[in-house]
Image (cartoon, rainbow, N blue to C red; front, side, top):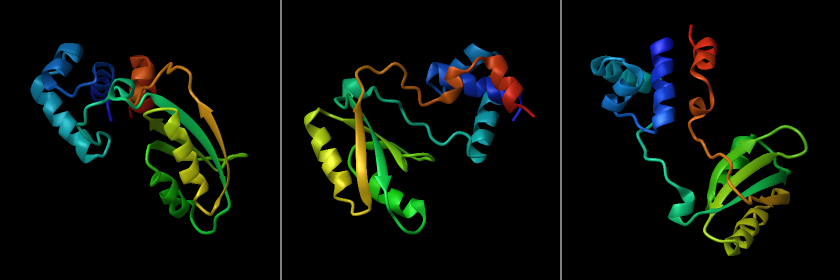
Length: 160
């Protein structure tokens, strides 16, 4: 990855679009070069999809719950994790080190659905305990990490 790739990824993160015309306006990189580089970034697996981002609150999934899961399981953690990921509403899950085995983030429609979520987790035999935290306000919900960095930092840390 070189500086132009990083500039493109930063612009995509900031603008929330992969439109070559909008990226050209933001970066000054020629549209034909943008097409070429976006294709290469897709082939390299850096760009995974062209999905639209959703506002979870506007959609009706504005209740965010963070759940710590302590579990006792045998075998690879990925096998057990599949059971956690199968619970409706789970949007992110992390295998962690420390006192907690997994941290799960769920987007729900109402506080009433939290009971269902926790019941679903506790119905998994290997789950020993859960610790849930309701969020009061979302301070940042950025799925594109480059948007949280200064362009100079990204260039310094990510270019060859």
